Length: 314
Image (cartoon, rainbow, N blue to C red):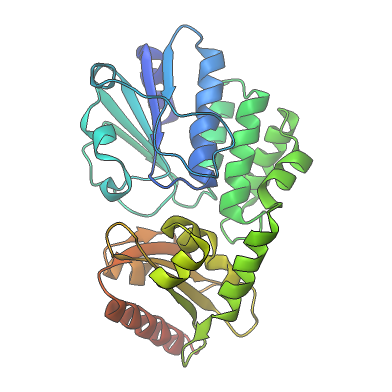
């Protein structure tokens, strides 16, 4: 599979590197990690990094690409295989499409190649492994991006998806110039206001009969601190992690634009992916998500999680 990816990369003079909407650190890390490495390896190729942006982008501005360029390009989409998570323009215009991902969903877009390593810690780990095996040099900028992606998706190597291979890849990235002291400072230092928001969030956490921790973040909560849905949904979910009594936690957040409810599910050890899939979502066994239509549906999700805990002697 890696040989085929390399063959496509070498065949095309124009390459577009994309990832899912509302990017997290792994999406950015895998995207820019691959981008910086290919830019240095193939200086005569036109290589673009595209997509939306947010406050996690500490790399560079994203490129704007014309429809004509799309149509002649190799498109590489990272960290998702789901149409719902990709901007329409991106997946509707390309010459060839490669997916590189670590989630457990199957692609729902026509593709030419799908390289999925579903037990990898992160998409950044997959990209780094590809670069190493195919002797594509990882420069300092690429190493920084890939290391940040791995740290983001492993919770600083604490999540169960972390493996011996993850540490081997991280070691290579350090040897390639990743400055871990600076990276960790950039990632985990935050303004006082952010701490205050997290404290209030935690103080409002509720619990089901089986001790599933949850938050229902409505418009009033978002407006109070002028927060966007994505920050609250993905950025605050793990404020509920680390409690002895809590084996599962879930964050429900209203989407300002659609009035849908974003649902982020997490578990310490018991798989919850089946619940995400039941409501049209996906992800990892212990970290996944879906989109709900009403607050009534949030109660159904909580009931499903309680049932799983009961079945597992929770």
